[in-house]
Image (cartoon, rainbow, N blue to C red; front, side, top):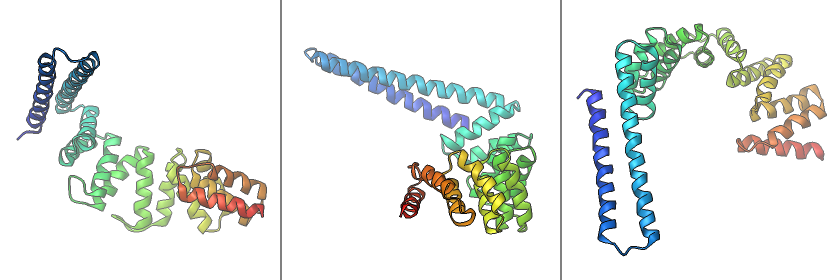
Length: 262
């Protein structure tokens, strides 16, 4: 069954269900003329809710239909959006891959990134690290920070490409220079392992200033254990301790502060 026909049938079925629910609500009102004002008010609200859901379904159907028409004419943005809809809303990864590929083959950067991740995770097709590298490279060369980071990871791990740590650092740096937070923390970890504290501090600081609790904690550790600057260490441990998003880092930072105060 063609995908467009399938979507239309699904939406039509949902509309029928909603219509039946609306009729049932109306029947309940007519069957109970003596119903209290509160009860009638509740039924009216339920009916409006169903009507609103019907309108939303019709809007979504209209949007998908219009996108399909544009995508079939070669509109890359429409193809990309269809890929997102099929992959993220309808959970039809094969169809998502189809539209990402059409846009990616026309040079659409975001679609190239998404197609790379589809190959990386095996969603909608067979997992293939070599193909993932191919599409990440195309997007990375266009300037996608996400693709540059993903490509750096592939070179660092030797997945889909021969392991090359220098090439990995090159791509991490390109992404980090665009403000890609994960690339910045990754570079910080690489440089601290290489005992290059200056570069480590540079990249951890950039990530820390974006709010990364991990980078803030690591900066605190560097200033406490290597640079021997207690004021700076306290400053970054405090920032990490004040964040609640990462409970492990949060607890470590609190413990570090308590130890420093002893």
